[in-house]
Length: 88
Image (cartoon, rainbow, N blue to C red):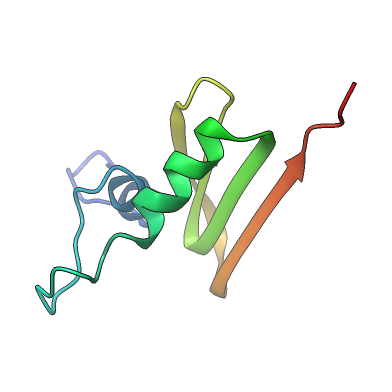
C-alpha cells in the first residue's frame, strides 16, 4: 500500500496468489487460478517466477515468499515469466 493506505496493482496480484482476492461472480469453481499457480510454483522446479499486470509486479522466490512492487508505466495486459531448473 502507498502512504495513504491505497492498494496498488502489485498488492492485488499478491492477494490473488494468496487466495484473499476472489472473483466477483462468487462461483465456487472461479477464482482459484492464481492460488493453484502459486502452489505449482513452490512445489515444482520453477524459479524466477514473475507476473506483471498494470503497474504491478509480483515475484515468487524459491521459499514461496511473494514480493509485490510497483512500476511507473503500466502494462496493458498480464505477462507471466518463469524459468525451469536445469536437471543435474
